[in-house]
Amino acid sequence: MAEQFGRRLRRGATSGAIVAAAVAALAASQGPGAIAPPADGLNGDHAVGAGDATSPNGGADGGSATGDSPYYLDLPPLKPPNPAGVPTSPQVPVVTGPAEAGIPTTVLAAYRRAEASVRATDPSCNLPWQLLAGIGKVESGQARGGRVDGNGTTFSPILGPALNGVGFANISDTDGGAFDGDTTHDRAVGPMQFIPSTWAVWGQDANGDGKKDPNNIYDAAQAAGMYLCAGGRDLAIKADLDRAILSYNRSTEYLTTVLSWFEYYGRGTHTVPDGTGVLPVDRSDRNPPAGTTRPTTPVSPNPPSPSTTPPADKPTQKPTGQRPTQPPKPTEPTKPAKPAEPTKPPVTDPTSRPPAKPVEVPPTVKVAHLRAGTAVLTAVTESTFAEAASVTAVDASGRPVAGVSVRFALPGTTDARFPAGATTVTVTSDAKGVAKAPALRAGEKAEPFTVRATVPGRSLPAAELKATVEVRKADVLARVGDTALTAETGAGYEPVTVEARRGAAPAPGVSVTAVVTDSADAPQQSADGPSFGKDAAGNPVRTKVLKTDAQGRLSIKDLVAGAEGGDYVLWLTAPGGGTVKVKLTVTAPAPTTPPATPDPTTDPSTAPTTDPSPTASGSAPASTEASPTRTG
Image (tube, rainbow, N blue to C red; front, top):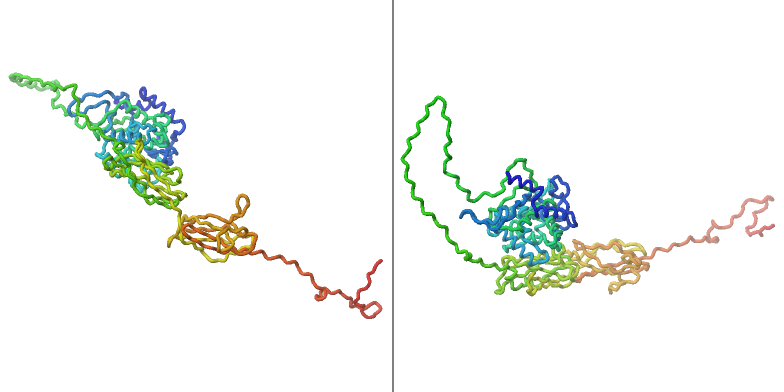
C-alpha cells in the first residue's frame, strides 16, 4: 500500500532532480516548436488530430510519430539506482539497483545499437540511448518487459487502440491493415508505437533481416532515433530535446514522464533477462476505480516454497461440562544428532576476473568498400525511376556486411528528389549487405547527374551511381477533327485539339512547341499572322510551349487572328519526331457600302411634278419648261 501511495503521490511531485526536470520540461514545452495539447476530454493527454505524421521533419509540421496514442504514466521510483548488489540465492540473478532500473537484455542492446548507428550518421544530433529507453518505457514498457525473440521481434504485435476520433486522433487506414491489421483506422504499432503512415517514411531494417518491421525492437529503435533527430535537432540542447519528445506525442504530461525516465536511466541501469522486465500499469486512457491495487513488481520466476512447519498450537479453553482429556505420556527424549560440520564458503581469488567477452566490431567499422549497384538509373521527366539506387557494403575480404548505415546524396544541379522532397536519405544494409535507397523521382530537368553513396563517419571513397533524365517523347502528333479554321481579323478561332502518341500508346506529359508560321515549308515565326494573345508588354505571342495531359492530348483555345488577311500555318512539333501542321485563314471583314444616289433621268419617281389642272382662263396646260424664278 505504501508503494501504491508513493506512486500516486509522485504524479503530483517527484523528488529532487526529477521535479526539476519536470518543471523545466513544462516550461520549455511552451516555447517555440512545442505543441500544447488541446482540451479534449482526456485530461489533456491527447491532441484532437494527428497532423502530418509523415513529415520528414519528425513531426515538426504538427504531427506525431504515434498519432498521440495512449502511453504509460508510471514514474520511476524515488530512490535512484544503486551500485551493484549481491545475489540473495544462486537462483536469483545479480541485481544492480531497483527492479525498475532493469532493462531487458535484447531491448537494451537495440537501444545501444540505435545510438551508435545514429551517432555515426548524424553526430551533431547527440542522441543518447537513455532517451530511447525512456520513450520505450512509456510507450510499451520496454516491449512488454522484453517479450521478444532472439531476433528482437515481439512474440505478438503490440497494438494501440483504433485511432477513430473517439478520445484519440481520427486517422483513417493508410496501410491496408498490413502493419496493424485494421483496414478502417490506423493504430500505433510495435514497442516504439509508430502509426503506419509514419513508419512508411521512417521505418528501418536495423537487424539486417531484409524487413522493416515496426514490431522488431532493433528496427523500431533505430527509426525512433532518426525521427527524434530530424530537422537538424541537437538533443544536447534542452529546447531541441523537448521538441523531439513532443514530436513523438504532443502532451506536456508525456514530456514530463519521458524526461523522468530519461534522467532515471541516466543515473544507472542494468540488464535483466528478456521477459522479466517490470510492466507499467498506469495508462493515460485508463481511470481505474479508487482503491484498485496494482502490482508494482514482477512475479519472481522462482517464488520461495511455502513453509512446511505447522504453526505452533495455541492453548484452547476447556469445553464446559466435559472432562479434560488426559495428556499423552511423554516419550523418552532422544539424543540429539551430532551437528553436521559447517561447510566453508568457497574462497574466491579477488584478483581473478571472468574471461572477457569478445568485443563486437560495429558494422560501420567492418565495411571496407561500397560496391555500386545499377549501372545507369534512367527515367523520363516527372516520373519515378524504374530502378532504385543501391550499393553493397563489403568488408576487406569482399563479404557483405549487414547493418551498415549508408547515405545517398543528390547533387544540387538536379531537381530529382527522394520521397518527401529529400535530397539525402540514410538507409541500413540488409543481410546481403545491400543498402537500397527509396524511390527516386525525376523533375522537369532532362539532364544526367550522379548519386553519391557514403558511409557516415568513415572516410571511404564514395560509390557513384550515374543517373539520367530524358524528355518525354512522341513520334506522332495528330489533330483531332478537321473543321476549317477561319476567323476575321481580331477575332478568335475555334479550339484546336491535338493528340500525341508514342507508338500506339498515348504520350502524356510531352512538351509540344506551337509556332504560327507563314507557310508549311518552314517553321519560322510569322511577323503578322495569328497569335496566342499578347505578353505583358502588349506584344503578340506567336510561339508557345504546351504539355499533353494524362490522355496525351492538348487543346489550344487562345488563338486570335491578326490584322493581315491571308493563309497561315500552325506548326506543332514534339521531341521524338511528332509533327502536325494546321491551316489558319484570316479574312478581312466585308466593306461597308453607302446608299446609291438616284438618277432623275431614269427614275420616274424623281422627275419634276407638273400641274395637269387647267388654268383659270381655261387654256391648255402650262409648258413644262422652267419659268424664271420669281423674285421680289
